[in-house]
Length: 336
Ligand code: NAD
Ligand code: UD1
Image 1 (tube, rainbow, N blue to C red):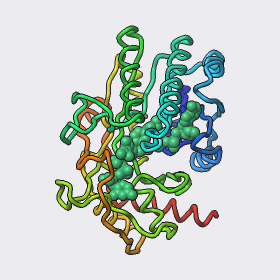
Image 2 (cartoon, rainbow, N blue to C red):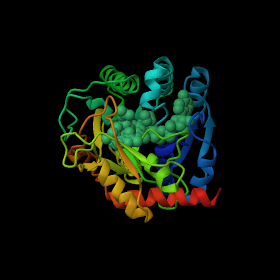
Image 3 (cartoon, protein in one colour):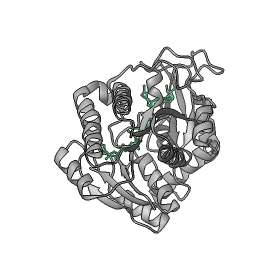
Image 4 (cartoon, rainbow, N blue to C red):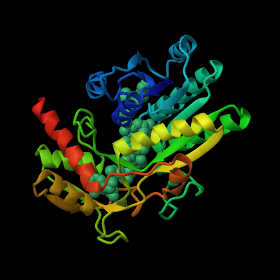
């Protein structure tokens, strides 16, 4: 049994990763300050797996507490999800994003190094492919960013590469997620953003639930088969499983690797809307709206590197992702 620390383990993706780690029999400690989640996620993880992960409630920006945690615990590896992730908010509050994401990661890496834990799997994003590459995106393409959130991912990848270059004892995997959606099939954990969702599937889910009137489709004049934006949607459980494969890889290989986690398939906004209609059994109203600034026409992964190095491939199709999202929404409603 390995002791795995999951920063941000109460969040959307982190909670699904905890479930998979506990199912495998690993010892899990969640390190979270609940700035975008709640301790209820740990109750749900316990309900699903029968095991409650340990909790260290702390802010990664609190250097002293992070050091004290690593000094007091023997940790085999870290999966680092903790961070702020809303693109629009990052443009309004860049310093808050740079502070939280960069200082938090620096504190974490320094505390790990000081206490002899040099294995980390990091949540990066396909956002690092920027505006100037053509899909499918391969890991060797030049990276860039178009907003402060994206820059934090780009800068953390750089920080990790430099750390590995200076000390060959590190094992680092930066996983570049495409568009994670869906929920655990139990319906007990899923994505539940505060306020009006920015991302497509949480928005469509609210339309299906009846709490938002209609979807605005941001542009129908892109150079795509139906004119709407194309993305690589990946089931959050598939994504979570990719982290276990990345941990196995990191345990056996030193150095730095950036690896895409995507399906390799693109789906348009209309494809998603129609799949969700099928999942919830309703017609969902929409209007065509102007393009959203900063959006690209098409984004999907080249998934070969993940297959070759991690022996991992996404399994779920779009309809399953929408069904699991809708199941989560219905359970949430039932529980008030
Ligand atoms: P989330 O907001 O649901 O989870 C992040 C968790 O980190 C939350 O529980 C939050 O409370 C915690 N956290 C944030 N700052 C912290 C700090 N300073 N100290 C301690 N805890 C802190 O987000 P998510 O969707 O689960 O995303 C997880 C990671 O994956 C993030 O780094 C995100 O940028 C990255 N990512 C997400 C997506 C996506 O579509 N969800 C896509 C690409 C990359
Ligand atoms: C967004 C972020 C990206 C982040 C990713 C995480 C932006 C510009 N990019 O990517 O950095 O890594 O989330 O999943 O925010 N759409 C609509 N109507 C809506 C919402 C979205 O038509 O109400 C369209 C978008 O134009 C896009 C697609 O749906 O074509 C997906 O959008 P979204 O879910 O926000 O993800 P991304 O834009 O890929």
